[in-house]
Image 1 (tube, rainbow, N blue to C red):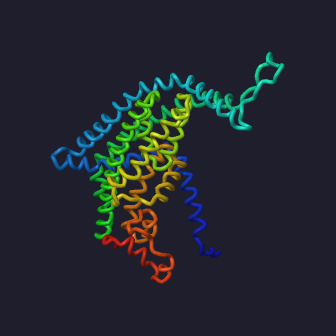
Image 2: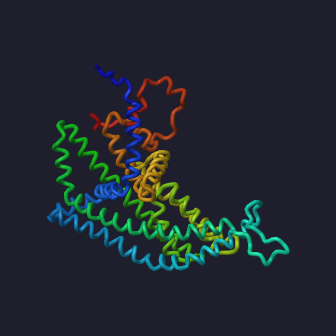
Image 3: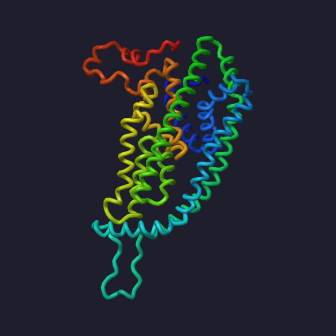
Length: 381
């Protein structure tokens, strides 16, 4: 019996893509260290090559780079351990103060005020407050989650560091084997150029954004110290980390600072002080400092950045949200060198041509004119 050929493969492709997405989500403990190590390899490989040109073997050069990376992060983490421990010890008192402040706010909102004791029945125990019971149960659950996730983080970080060393030590060998496996010389140049471009852009983005976020974290620590918020050093470090996640990170941080202000201060201006201070610093950084330093070469479409952060955050949580932009930069580097991905590149890149043309003028242009004009690349085959 002759089998009927499949004329429409798109349903099967859609099912495969859907299955692949959920497989990536479930394989997070395995794939997250691998992808993070690959992105760090792209960013740190130029340093290993620089050491190799000065006579240091790749194995030793990779060891030097990895030790330098650990040496720059571990002391910072250790310096934040004491403020974090102090915050964890004072967490029950902080939650109690937050509940008191929330009770004051709930009494002013109809339908949300806490259950009141009826007159003449003062001897009876007050009615249970669902909000407080929920927060108490969630606090116990949160302790178990923190301990479990902490152990998983240590294991995942150790695996990432070990894999990073092996990838840095063998980066030249792996890349040379990949280039040798390609048949066409022009395609070899595209592969090598794409990898080198991704390395330069990811390294530049990490360096620039890391410096900017570090300055923002230090400035926020000083401002919160002046405002009287407890643990300003810890809040500065949290600010620097959350600013690596575009859009969603600053929004979450504003909510956290608002809750911290509610649980710490009494007056209205002091309650909103930490959040307003971050809003001012973030507005200056995102609208003036970052556009001048990052420049147009690394400009990405805001829609693509937001969707990438949402997608990777849904897949892998905080680690996924942190790597969303570097993954997008690497994908754009691929799209610049593959003819079939020109349209995707147009959506990934920021608009470099100023104001878009009127829609009526686009109807009179030949098909693909804008696509070729915006995605023209002499490296394309």
